[in-house]
Image (cartoon, rainbow, N blue to C red):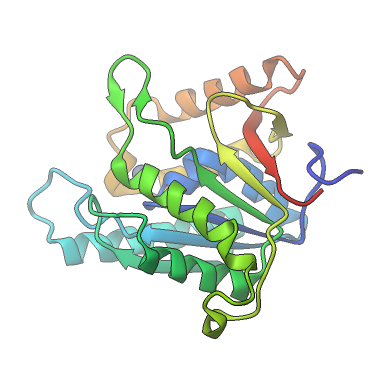
Length: 236
Ligand SMILES: [Zn+2]
């Protein structure tokens, strides 16, 4: 099958998102499916979500420690072994050269064929939500690190040999072009999200919401459950 087809599974993939649980919401069922097929997956978290609560019994330190533990448990559910915590501060992530260089180093080290990230242009979300600024920052940083920086030999040679990423799977809401059938792993996605207790224990009908999104995504492609992406095909 051709690269980037619905059923194609790369040998190595990476996710670059801002917070614990972003990856699961965006592409958790696809990752579980790919992990089962033997894809080596590296999860990069730019922050550990160290201010992501309204519960003042936490400190930024205790919250980050808890959320990293929850992230490890969620990755266990999905069959993902490698997590990289960059530990930038939550709500203060900026796509600067330091972050770009850290991501270039990780891309060169892990050599993913595919990287998943968010949509940096997503500012408004439905009628009543603003997208988190860290989500946009992480997405810009990821795209800038992937292209062209990780592939340029003369740039930051100390960070490893240049590596070309073949495709970027963007969790976008428009210009979607790739649907992954996740009928066998949608329940693992829900189970992984359930490991993020401090964020999601109060989420009303998480299971129903996640299932319905996957049903809606799969509808036009005849899939019972799907995750869909805008795939940037850098190297066919
Ligand atoms: Zn987030």
